[in-house]
Image 1 (cartoon, rainbow, N blue to C red):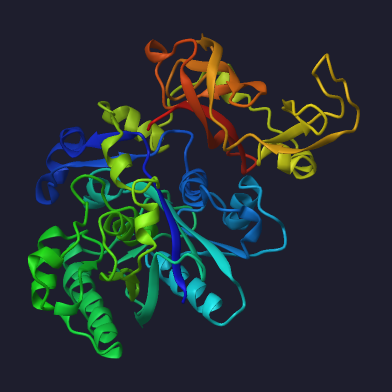
Image 2 (image 1 turned 30 degrees about the horizontal axis):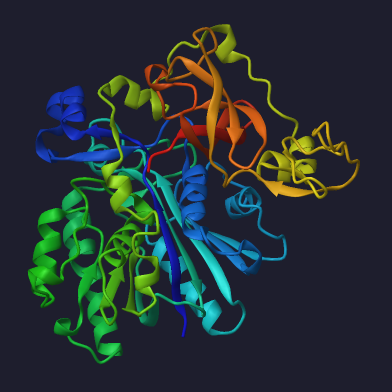
Length: 482
């Protein structure tokens, strides 16, 4: 049996009501008005940081040393040439003897990577593969994409043991369909008219893939508990389901009104939402869309009961949110406008890449050391135990702080240093189980900071040197969301 062993989702804390965007651009949105809200990645988040967050939720309770591979699906990589799956693997402190791959250039990359991972496991080339899908999607101001595009990530652990949803088959159709594209230098998505994408692509490719899968597996629509596919055209979503023979109670909520279109992660996030409410024996179909369509059939097993209520899927993230009320700040987060940062904002002192390589486990993985004799943890990594009653030398073993929670020991705010979301907040954190260090604080306002506040770690962008093309990543601290 091969299939899904665990799942994890991630949605940024910030949301923006589409009415704010509509009012910001006025008449340009008249023909494309859409209700609800969408998720907005913070200024220090990107497709890599959100993938890490989803992956950590997915891997909770699982031994990372048993992973054989890591796949990333994204259309919004921060790099044109640098494998992002390797950055994520280093950040998660995975062993180096794994296969990695980036799937990109189409919003269907999430489901394509899913099929590739399952096929790899089925062929015996790997026992377990971690799949991450993540996007920070940017629509041109005034476009319909600005209203619908959203940010988020999903992660699935695929394997043979402890399977909560077994893969029963897949079916794909592929077309060079030019409805959306981005070329070198484009900050925002480009598209042909929506009617073309809707009528010639969305209405045809998804039914072709799902109908092909049902025929291949000798099933009928009535055999399926939930059918899942992106809802970028909400009205067409309902009509397509009806046309394919599915009843209303078989249609999984597409979440467009409360989440938005998260690109490669979108169908997988809806799948996770369905798994959170599924029961053993349910058959579910998930289909992606973009340059064709992939459809995958899963059957939920008895193992699903062991993970319900224990995983950070989608439901809790939908409920945990903070409203972004400024359209201008939204544009600044998207780097579509450049607020004045002063001298401090222009001068970026980045860490040498050779140092990042040498200390990659310490910087990206947030790994320190723990004394073998007395158990005292320290960050950064040290040779000498800091415990005055111990003082052991060269008796240290690696110790990971990234998955540890803690509390605020002290904090301060900085109104001089530039940040797109002022003021800058810094805190000294006492980790559960020992260890103390200072970090930037994000996803938090100064008024809510207090001594003793429970926090956890979140992988974020630390700086971006656009001239040198260097993105610096490190860990920040955030208030506990759950």
